[in-house]
Image (cartoon, rainbow, N blue to C red; front, side):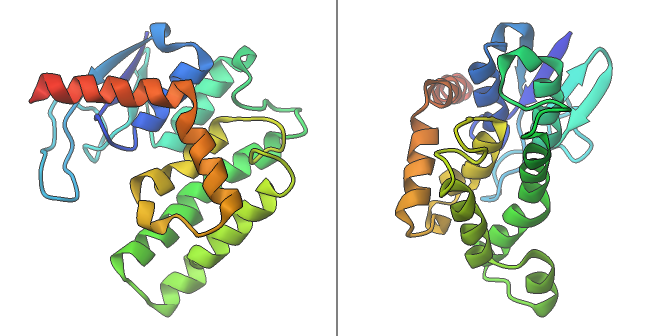
Length: 204
C-alpha cells in the first residue's frame, strides 16, 4: 500500500505531477493534509506523519519516506518501466542523482536566500547564488530540451518547480523560460493543478 500525504498548492504537487507522468496515480492513495504556510495560514495536521508537519510524505507498507527528491527517487526506482528516472547502470543515472540532490542542497537554498533578501558570505560560499543556478541549468539545456538531454525525467519536474512557486526568481533567459513553460504545460502538471483546485474548493 502506497499513501501520499499531500498539501494542495505546496511542494508536494510535484509528486502528484510525477505520479501522473508515470501513470501510477491509481496505485497511490492521496490523503490531503494541512501545513503551515509562509503567509501564516494553515496548521500542523495531526494526520500528517511527516516529522516537521510538511508535505509531501510517502508511506509504503509502514515505511515513511519524506522530502520530494527522496520520494521521486523511491517511486522512479519502484516503477522503472515508466522511464521517468534512469536506473543503476544507465548512463544518465549519475546525472539524475546529481540533479535531485543539487536541487535540495544548492538550488532551493540559493533561491530562497535571494527571495528573502538574505546576504552573508557563509551563505554565498555554501550555496552560491541565483546567477550560478541559472548558469548550471542553462548549460544542461544547451545540450538538449531537458536536463538529461532528450529525456524528460523527474529531475525536470523537480528543478523547474521553484520558478513556478517564485515567479520573481525566474531568470530572464529565453532557454530557461521556454523549458519552464514546457514543463508547466505538460498534461500531468495541468492535471495536478486541477486536482489541487478541486481540493481547495472542497476545503473552502
